[in-house]
Length: 157
Image (cartoon, rainbow, N blue to C red; front, top):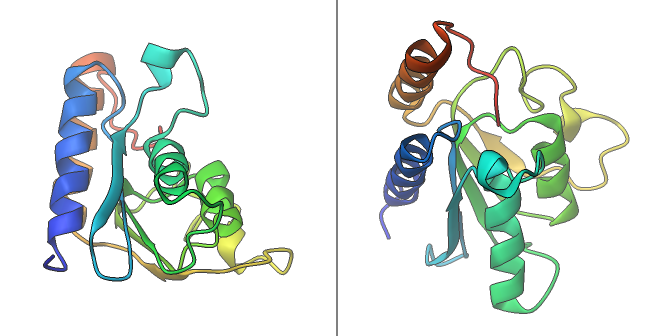
């Protein structure tokens, strides 16, 4: 699978989340060969569960598909910088790499805020690549919040 293909799938998940009135964030987990193990969009509203972020759902599904808790050879692709909860989950699942789209100065937990993966207490720090399809990811979020709240915030994992 081409390098950009997983982020394209994550964008599809984000658009589907927006269509369901969820904050438009999508995530995909790929294995070392690039095969898709799981994909998900936010389901916070549908599940009435503030932890039902796209990353959490995709990581859980990938681990279940593999029948084991660690995803040490996997990459988590997500359209928005993971929040502190999702960044910590990526560490706990021991993913090899986290690739994200838009940066989130307000609610991010990787390059902003808590910077979970670079904290001394982080037991496993995956490689991080930010800004992949950043403009497209940020535009989707901006449009969503403008349409629903009249705001321009990007937070919402």
